Image 1 (cartoon, helix red, strand yellow):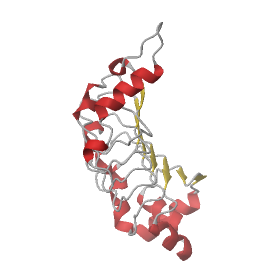
Image 2 (tube, rainbow, N blue to C red; image 1 turned 90 degrees about the vertical axis):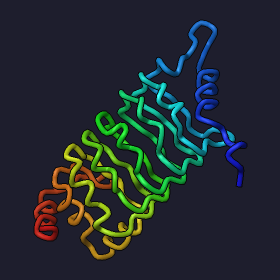
Image 3 (tube, rainbow, N blue to C red; image 1 turned 135 degrees about the vertical axis):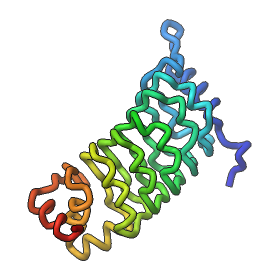
Image 4 (cartoon, helix red, strand yellow; image 1 turned 30 degrees about the horizontal axis):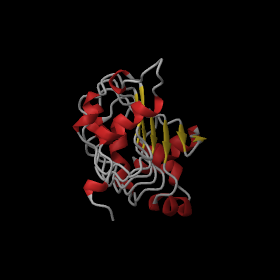
Length: 202
């Protein structure tokens, strides 16, 4: 396992991004850019830090395929709408509340998340991709009851998905908790599933 010192810092990743996408005619300045790509750094980023707060114009931030364990440093990202954190080592959603007023899409598949606690702070969340994580119990989905704008949820590959699919009522249990959801795992939710879900969840 690499030490922190051998990892790429966010500051250096931002410099790498500017160098990669700049041309002599059109220099790229990260603080003025809407789509900042810091994914797949070699060596990877291990820590999100306050260097991210300089990205005032960023609407879409890509940090996937690194070794990040914790969501942090997003306080200054006041226009952020899409946050991509797939394929990291993240265990919790703590830290997302810093972009709770603007974030519309959170892509966080292939991590180590066991609970959706913190999602309730994302008042504008429309899309949540959280497949291939470690969510194992139904109450862990309850924070989504507060995400009144949520339209699309990707949950496949979590222990709860296997268990409830085998029981035959995964879609109803989710629809009962989030009746305004339009799509689960890429398939539209039906009125029948909503009605049955409302009865089960009460």
